[in-house]
Image (cartoon, rainbow over all chains, first blue to last red; front, side, top):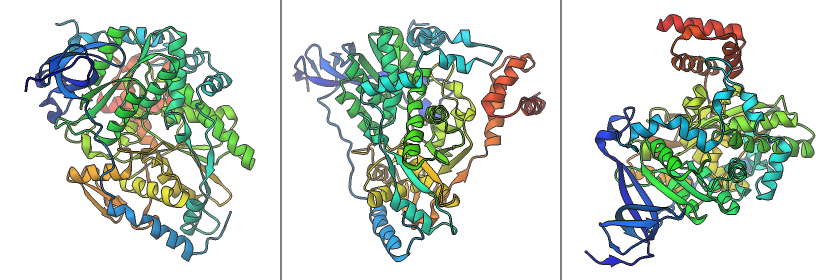
Length: 106
Length: 473
């Protein structure tokens, strides 16, 4: 894929900040084995293809360079399916309150 | 060594800090360890009326104090006769960006603007980022938020993903990093490159911004009930929430209200571990922050942390992840308030604490936070399942952070675990000694400082230090 993305597109770039050998001395082994990665979004400053080096202008107006990793990346977080372990809590508590007369109705 | 290498930037940290916060912390030193904490706070020039004025102009604060009548009734079903204190909550979700963090941000941004900084930077993965971005938007300042956002497999913590979205919605640049404490290096490098203000969570401004929370809740309760709270339960992480709230309560005259910190127990999980990162269902309000910060506040991103929780704590408890999810569901279904989850840590604790207090007493939970996509028990539990964590109903104390989350089957299973404050104090003193070149250089001013820091008398401090030196020397 060498299709160029046009200037002005909202994109994300990706950079390696520190390689595994450059990690801080205090990090645990599992973290030391992997690089410190960075993702930042912004407007593409010049046409570039995904996977290539690109320059962006961020929301704060800074020019940053990195590998073009995504074009208009979606927000993927959400809720997912309802969790069965939470579904009955409300019913159970309402039943408890109805069955047992509280001493004080303040 | 490259000019922007890890070592080069870390070596410049003090100078970068001084430029970016505009406070000469050195001048507050009064001993080897000691510094003039109240002087540092007073020199900001903000008193409670001025802080309230700044916050009023940005629609921060003046949040409702809501009585949780159904949760109180439920607590009374489980209490000994005559017991079961009334539970109130300060609905901080009503702030502009949805949490009490707007209070911290409002004063920081006001200060950055007064001092003529062109923009602000904050290193935060939580609500504070959204708060800074929101306040910066209103003030017309550029804003960069640095987050620890995803693990090496590219899996984002859903709550942090939501904060990314919120910060971007407010027009901030968001730097998303993978797991690791070197976030601090990226943060310092950015401060150096941009000349922006360091909107740290731990400056005097950030902590003073919370004083209005304690002040307001004391005044609101007094107006409604003609009493001050018997206990105020505070979700505890970096210490700012405890410190600011307690100072505000004192300012309002509520000097007898017990300050109780509550954290989610995440013992056994390593905060800098790439593997453990997405095995936590809470990104704040947990022991991974509260224990290290209570036992040594000056590990923060400023030379002297204005959040010094141990000076104010009367009691410190922990609850489990499963208990907080349970009370979050109860708050939604019994009180019609869908909030949290992390902000409900103090509610889970308060529900238990109320049962041991008398009926005429009042316990105030001092915050809620907004909820939504990613920032929700459902999102967290679905991620936990994906990470192989067992989720079931049962005795919540059987849960093991990172391995299982046990959601109570009934409300009497909620309990608090006490954190021994004497152990915390000893640990603080141990850390204080560790920070010294030579322990025998401590002055009288240092002993007085350590006494204030730990709420012990100087003689006890001296004895504990002698004992600690004896152990190591």
